[in-house]
Amino acid sequence: NAGVTQTPKFQVLKTGQSMTLQCAQDMNHEYMSWYRQDPGMGLRLIHYSVGAGITDQGEVPNGYNVSRSTTEDFPLRLLSAAPSQTSVYFCATRRPGGIGEQYFGPGTRLTVT
Amino acid sequence: ELKVEQNPLFLSMQEGKNYTIYCNYSTTSDRLYWYRQDPGKSLESLFVLLSNGAVKQEGRLMASLDTKARLSTLHITAAVHDLSATYFCAVVNLNDMRFGAGTRLTVKP
Image: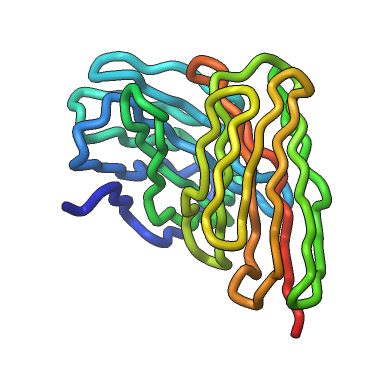
């Protein structure tokens, strides 16, 4: 039972390059989300999904795309990387119903030069 | 718009002392979370608070929620060095989740 996994752990991109951050979960949670964490700002919600085929924007969606074709996977795509997207990215899932406890992946540290 | 304000942002404590971290939020919320983050690590869930008057305790940490005042507190009792970390509160309204900026706690001997 791996929980929430993210790949890669570290990535360096040049401005204008594109890439996909991978997130996978084996807990069968419907809700998945992506956050970015910048120093001194806490985490900010980029996109979220309440189930396969359903995605929506969070607080800071510009420059990012998501899709959800399966319950297990929720990739985050950077279309044309910019230095302002240098950050640590966390994927999370939330248990349906009950107290709604949320589980975070280990994070991906992205640097855009 | 849902906004979350956390204070203080930095807190230096002596071991054995008590202190409280405050989390204010601007609109109605479904639930409130407290997380701990160690440097370079992911977030570890501490508490989930659902209703007005909710109080949860784990070891030296106790969290409470006042939905009328839109305020949650994280109280630290008799701090020890192992509690040094950054603590975040986060508030959910439907599927929108907003985090406070975090409180960086340092416990000194």
